[in-house]
Image (cartoon, rainbow, N blue to C red):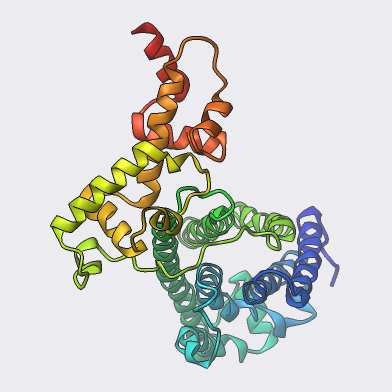
Length: 385
């Protein structure tokens, strides 16, 4: 049969080669978070496997190897668990271990193999007819089982992946809370990379759902599916650079993200003592201005005022109703307001740095969150007044 090679299939082929190469690099690299690299390597390899399946379909080369048709489908059920593992490996490197105890995460993968069995055991001609949805033998129990097995496979994938995306989002939110509970800055300890790759998975997931229902019920062409695969190819190039250079993601002992009533229920710090500590803290903040240190942490501030980090965190949380990140940045914003209120031309970056912020972008974000206006708008307002 003639080999149908077009631009899209060439892009797929390049993507496959790039994905396999990237997987090998991630498997052999020994720097950084090695376990996270290994997990990312497996994810990349499965994406390459997916691209290979689409390449066979686009080129119609599966006529030569019908046993390869949709062989990649069950492996797609590994995306969800592996994404959660990747998030855990980056956000909890000291706690997360990939061992046999994780086997329940792969139950759905084995169910997918069983659901695929009726299709895999069809003869070559029936498989090809299945691909084109042409002249399916509806009187054959085997063909009917294969059809419903494939349909169940898609629905199961949508449900399973959706659940894992929810789990992943909760882990990311919890980790954000951990960072804000212990640090007054997020530059170089944040997880923009991890957040972006999670968003990318969500986009692919939504495109998959749209493509399935568009083709299954509305007979829409394969444009959406092609966009999905092109995004995967593009992702390989992003992974090639950023996957090996993800920023340090904080992992420490401040991992408790429960509500304050539960978190401090066993604390010996009562309300009266907490109020006294708050007065001492506020006095120290006003006189010594530790917030001007751009990399101030909860532990450092606790050492300065000679109280435990737990008591300091509890005092800020319970008495002020905020986390450490917002507490320190509140002082920095007030400091910035003083600079902005001065007459004459101003340099926003200098004000940001002089107020304790690490960058102009962090300053803008914090200032607007607190005041509902940009520093420039605040400056204009003070001039008018």
